[in-house]
Length: 601
Image 1 (cartoon, rainbow, N blue to C red):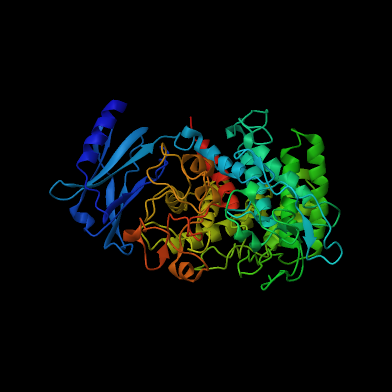
Image 2: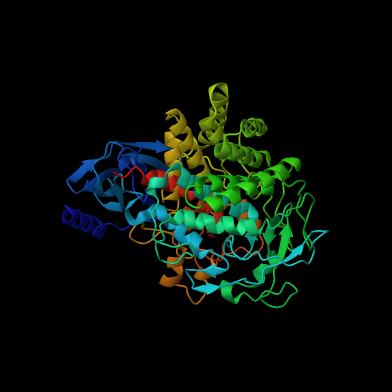
């Protein structure tokens, strides 16, 4: 049957002129057998005069239906092509012909419950996260930033040296943030704790290719936890950030980082403390007014780590438990957001909320030790922010409402009973309602605002929808959930996956991401291989793109025929706003992909 499929696909492809203004979009990873399955047509021809058909191992079949929708600018027409009834596993080709039988476009897709487990797609984010390691980097085989660092923005310990080597670089630059790193740790621990059987072991704790009897996702989470303990070196001392935007003077590989922070080229970098007042050493300062958002993240990650590692390394788990309870006490006593520190440019993570962090810390401690006082606290803090504010909004500042998914709500709904459970399920439902409603008017059924890191928000929405559906059995948001997932895998205006994937999985994946390995001597297969699994930032409003400092295009825009006057995406190194892979966005994929992979029989 495979040979028959290949011959048929080749015959169709040979006759297709692939007109840019008559394009098909599909989920390039594939569709589960029980998925809501659809493709999108964008073009200047009215879909009512077009013929859509699917070719597979057993011949040609009709699609279920073609539903016209509001046009997605700049094309004149849009339609959704449904084929949910197609449940037989296999490779397929969707073809589009005009009324004379001329082929306008063809696109391949896969159906099968192993869509996210074949090629071990669910493990690919760990490939990217591993190469983000600071200190020893197993992908590059080098070490970097081994002198970190000296304390700044602290009255009592300014200038003192602490060993804070380790952790991960945040994105293409080499800054390190507690905010995004702690969320990455929690996301990976949550993914494992929710579905431990799916995760495999092929790397050791250092990240080298050498199985050690521990799931790789836990090796990676532990790498982050051990760094977080260095960032909490003494009772009452919590560090928030390593380096600042002086880092951007260097754009090479991390081991050769030569930026001078006043201690010599490539030597000690500044370590910013968690601060309850505005901080920043240069022109710009943040708006910090508490410790709870950052120190609460210490507490939640330490608490979940203590639970997960209890049967793997009891001594490590006990140490994490002690750190978790101490951090929770400090966070609770210092309400308010603790933001990252800007420097000579105005960009920083503008996190304004904090009750969600205390909620997650409290419910994670309750989940670890069963002490009712933590459940009471979690419910109280959860009621202060029933819905994550970005959900249903048109815009927000960078990372203003973070983390993008409130896992505390889902944990409370899971662990509490009666009216409390019902209340927090309503909270989850309310957020989903707002996003689903916002997306109901466009052909992609996509309600995510196009702010910086919009792809992170898409993953957050899918995560919340999956958790809600598993908690309740209610499928009313399944269409919106599926649409956001499909968007990430290429069912979007640009026909590009938003995750850097190998060629055997995808037709079109980022090839020129804003990452150091894409702009050095390792550019090409070696550099791109190290980036596989990374989630790029995603499309932004054109107004955001046009006003950012230093953003540009360094080559012709391959997607110019599908750029919208309102929103843009570029596969171009020079566009750091839409095409930069990030640590926390990539880590947030692990729950979604782990659950999807578990569907394989």
